[in-house]
Image (cartoon, rainbow over all chains, first blue to last red; front, side):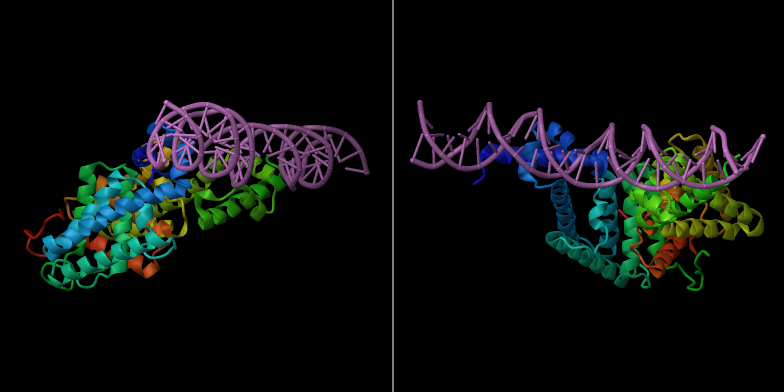
Length: 194
Length: 194
DNA sequence: CTTCAAGCGGAATCACGATTCCGATTCTAG
DNA sequence: CTAGAATCGGAATCGTGATTCCGCTTGAAG
């Protein structure tokens, strides 16, 4: 059993790291995290072998929250709404919590055991919601998961920069969602850009 | 007048830096750039006071290319096509040339004299093309420049990661462009995501 | 063909953070 | 209350790159 003070410190470090990470992104220094936690760097390292490990722990917790939200939506929401809600939720998260995107990054490559599992589940949830939305006619049937992932990635990264005020992001997302909806009436009016 | 060999070396450094930057992003090392240019680090520093200065030079050249393209489009293309073409062009550039996005970043904050000028011009070009596209009915009248900048930023960043194959990006962009077009027939069919 | 300032190469220096170490401090079992 | 293990704190160490320095080379003016 972990010594009570050790447990307390671990929590303090985790909390401080989350705050600092949100404020300064991955470039945050370990010293700073330790200072904010009211603890020595040594203590930080006792609990997390490396900076990367610390970040991984935080990100894992966040993704877990999102996956929990996915579970909730799976049962509580109508399929045509679940997709947009989940998408929005992820982007909103990115807007607040920097570096989350790094986790979503390549929702399917890399290694790292546990995280890979989360990526798979995240991707699965998105695939499921997308399918549901398409079946219920809320999303055009011709967009595939990879395209959605690219859009989600882009939206998250843009949101993460924090350079756009909330309303702007909302409007941008609205445009994007409109693009995902099936064309209103006549089917012939498409085209790309080029 | 600069000694001929110096001019030659400057060009070699610039070329090598561009390649290395595209391959490895901003994390590329000065040593590597010097090596590829077939030159010593000292020489790199003789021409560019700092790594940042070197990158700035490259980015400036690129943005200049884009601005030139904007001039071309301003006269050669119909207003309803110019917007989409320019948008696509920028994203395509980001897909190839990493770190370009850093330049587009905040198309309006920061300092750095010359670059600020470029930012202003870039933003002006986008504003102009957007206005033209909206007048000609190619883009919904209710999207504003900030929203466009956010979308462009997101698209560029996603493209820059290089994790999405060309076709996927094309499809994602197509969705986004569809969202920018005015609703087909009945005007009442909107909604956000929430 | 000299001369010598502009340029060159690349080893040495610096700066900055992550990570390690270890004597000093707590916990908590007994 | 006391010993011993588990934790601490934070100074010292390491590694990694950017940047500086300087003796050597080379272009080109006379």
